[in-house]
Length: 291
Image 1 (cartoon, rainbow, N blue to C red):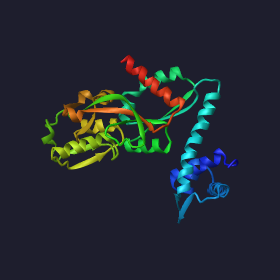
Image 2: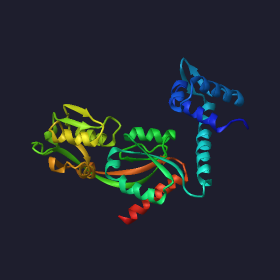
Image 3: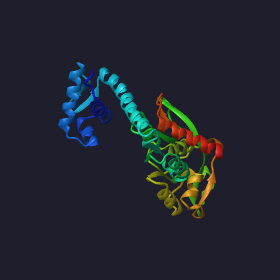
Image 4: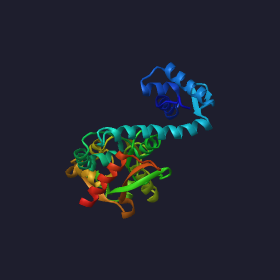
């Protein structure tokens, strides 16, 4: 066990996270033979098979799953130890996930203030859907993520940070005035996994409305432009509508209160603690007290 170094644990964790030697090698920028040798050496040192091998696919054994839990903790602690010992100031990399809507309308003042307090922390922002961000949090790829209701809380701790008001957005000259008029309309939304899309689809189902199609786009700017052009309708937070500067080109229709009001949370893995995570939570608390 004394020979089980952190580098080997990082390689082992990457193979589990990405499902194969090939994918792990690509992510770590190493040759496949090096990854294979390090995994075999680790198994020999421990005297157990860490993977079930079927063709090119590797599935963690029970022993592999147990080691994975320890590897996550040890790698995280090594980063925290290095950070804590460097000049006594908070340093390192903060990799944090966010929804497009939160990044567009909420994060600039928060992260600017954070940078002023912790100038030695390098902030890396990763955007994605709620489902994709939760998966990255569980894997330990990111420290935490800003996501919106609804989501599954299993394996997560969370802190409510923002409240958003959603609106149905239509073209300025659109005849649509209520939910019934959406029958046969084109819905413009992010891909599946987006919380706001789930809210919209659930609401339409409750109203027994079936849209003609769903046009999937990757940014709120693109969605807003297509709505203004009469391509379809969308659902988005009022704060984002202001941020993308199209309020004069579209109409914002109110949604029922139960649909319109959604909460944004900061989420992280159950039991995960670090100085950088606590610094983000403290910054959020400061902003809430100031607002």
